[in-house]
Length: 455
Image 1 (cartoon, rainbow, N blue to C red):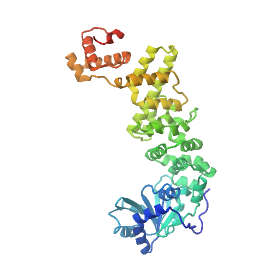
Image 2: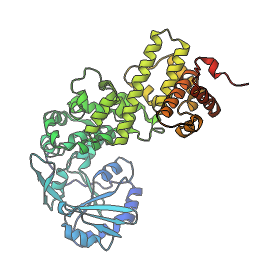
Image 3: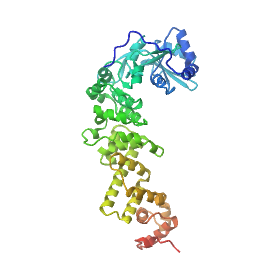
């Protein structure tokens, strides 16, 4: 259980590096001075404070909390800013931008929640400790007061950072009841900051899981995406498994009797370069063991309101993985006949060339590595023929020109050319033209002789 707030914040003589202090002084020093001159307190809060204390530099926008009420915030920030917005005013927040610096300044808050909603009833406060005490974890419940650069750490967040502990500033059951999304944030911070949740926090997540039903699918998907975007998300996924949350957010895992490939999620960064959506491969690794095909994975992601682009990529990777696995099994069953495997490899390349690397990694993650000699055979065929297998050298318009006809026959001709390409290898535009002409005359061209080069 989180500790009781200290009676007075404990100061530190130096909370930030000299470089960070100089940069912040340049960006918001005059704004802090304006608030102090008007008799108001001005505190840096949130992830910027945490990351700066970890030595990560200044990341993201700048979040401020103050005892000034929203109207007074707007008065004080307007002379400093190039632009001011007040969409969050009813929650106590005024946003502003000056040059490349964006700040959000929020009145100290003390809030309460209804049992069926994550939306708080906001009450303003003049006590920064009360404001910090409503935050999710102690490592996010620290503040730095400007212009004096004093660290306020009433819940020992700095100690928890040093000891790699994830803990809540107050009783976790209450915080998770108020906002159940914090349970998924616990998973993310476990991975992002290499923190280990306390037994009290973990136990509270297990008992509070039913509250997750009040959170929208969109918010759950956004939190899971943030987790899967991390360089090493496995610790967070392991936390979801340990607490039972994984089955809550991904129903196919509810009654699965296979191991979650959490560790494999950390080993795929080298594939990010060719995936437009780096999260897609991790989704495929995570869903593949419990989804029989790409369609099942797509249904799961669609229910989470995942983007159509990512959903399509995940489904394609899983389809490619299943097809690759089937091709290898059939090759083994037929004695690894070289011609049969070459045809199978060409079909895989033609259908899934963009997903084959991801499919190979997925199979390895699931404990079904491709193995030899099939991996080498596939690589050799991709290197030698791959560029000529992903498309035909003629399109429908060219087919109509050759045949002098349109309609269904065009599709039939293209399908026949595709079959010939898979059977015998890539076609040149001239060879495709010759084959189409012969096909149109009703001649049959089967076997390698049809593809001997003209002399």
